[in-house]
Each structure stands twice: as structure tokens, then as C-alpha cells.
Image (cartoon, rainbow, N blue to C red):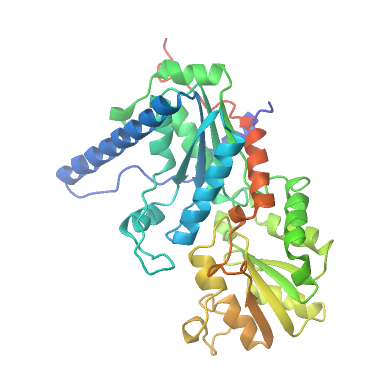
Length: 379
């Protein structure tokens, strides 16, 4: 298998990872925080140990998403996990969230299902599940990023794997160093790349899959995809360029495809509109799609939000204005594209052809070279 080169890993190591402890003013609170974290490790260790004992499998796949609090997103994650279980029958598949906020709000039941019932779901950070996978001593581990671009969130995924391989979380949760050393020696810790990792292979393939789904819409009007993007100060590896590259690849199929973001400078909804008007598109239908792994807050609010809450006429380019209301008030006919009978937009994980790109990334996952350094270098 291909190896991720050391100089790339050196760059990845600069990623900001959420601290294990929050700063506290008194020692009692600090001790309580440590105890809570230790119990979280213990709980997940038991869950994973039980799963491995039942399955008797020796390979683990850990999927890492940013997260969500929406029930339709939970269902999308469930389906993606099931697809991975089918693609990797030799492996136990686990799902994790990297966002503490999403984890906490999902556990608290922030949103409801389509019948109005509060939905509570428990997800865990990659560090807990990685530790549990290590404690269960799987002989081969795949960590798959469910990010769309190799940006800030992906850098945090890589950093979490490197920290796991170096027993870098807390003293009371150390793994067997000989086990970690063997993972490294056997080249048995792998990293699956984000969806649009490779501009030469991934970008054209995703464009092909999206066009196969939405060519009929493009024949009727504009098809606009809303991605997330990174602010300039967090544009790790300059990954924002993937959105530009995807728009170009899509327009090779039809010039009415456009790709914008909620957080990439010079690629907001107003920049998308300018590119449209520069191409003589001043009105007509505009089909809106989320270019994100799932349809969560951004898809429901920033993209599809309707009504006065999502429109400030005095500040038309405000980030608080939804794409739906923005284009509607500029004379277009926005349509939030959904499958028949569905009440929610779709995320990319719900599109089998696009999900398969992620799955292929896992099958072609790279050994995370130079991730391990002994805790006992003197030996």
C-alpha cells in the first residue's frame, strides 16, 4: 500500500485538536474532569470489547464525521455505516463524531423526528473509540475521514490518530505500547482520505456522479451546491480550491452547475449569483443541494431556510440570509431538491455513487507512516 510521507505528516501535526481538559479554577473540578474522562474511556472500551467478542473479527474501521443533531442525519450515518459493513464484512465498523457540540446536543435530544418525537443519540469522539479499538487489540485499523475536503477537520482526524499511536491522551488510559509498536511494524494503521482529496481522480468522479443524478435538473435551470469551506485562517492545506475545481468539473457536463460555500471567502452565495449573471443567468429555476456529508443545520437553515427569519432586506448579503431566500428575493425560483416523499435535503453520504468514493478511499487507505514513537525510547 502507498504510504503517507513523513513531510506531509509533519504538516498535519500542526492541526488544532480540542484539549482533553477544560481549564478550571480549582483542583476539585480538575479531578472531576479527569475522572469523567477516565470513565468515558472505560465505557467505550467495554462497548467495543463486547462487540469484538461477539463478532470475533480482528479488523476495525472507524468512520469519523464532524457530526450533527438532526434525526435525518443520524439515519444517513446509519445507512453509511451499514454500507461499510457490507463493503468490509471482515471488519467491525464504528462511527464517531469529532464535534463536542454535536455530541452533547445529540445526546440531549436537540431535534425531533418527522413525527415530532425527541430523538437522543449517543456518539463519541474518535479518541475514545480509537482507545477502545486499541484496548481490544484489533490487528488492523482503518480510520476513514467522512470530510468532503482535506481541510481543518481532516487535519484534526489525522492528529487524533497520531495521538492514539503515541498514547497521548491521559496517563490513566494508556494502551499497551508493544501493541502500538506492532501496529506500526506491521503497517496496520491506515488513513482513508476525504471525498475530494485528489483533484485528478476524486473531483472528476464526484462530478460524474452528481451529474448522473442531477442532469435533468440542469436541463431545467441552475443546479447550485452549497459546501462548507474554511475561512482563510483555517484553510488547512489550501483545501478550499476543491470547490472551484468541482465547479469546473461539473461545468464540463453542463455550464449551469455552480458550487458555493458558507465559509469560503469569495465563494459565498452572492459570488455564486455573480458567476451566474456573468453567464447571462438572471432568473429561472435554481435547484439547491447540500455539498456536505449529511444534511444538518447548514442544509436546513443556511441553504433551505424560508421566511422572514432567513431574510434581511437591508443586508441582502448577510450570512444570516439563507440561499433560498436570497435567490428568491433576486428574482429566481429556488427549489430545495429532495427525493420524492422526503421532508429533508440529502447529504452526500446518502448518494450511493458518492458514498462509494469514500468506500474506495478506505479500500485504498494509506499506511500512516511515522505515526508511532515509543513511550520508552530508552529501551
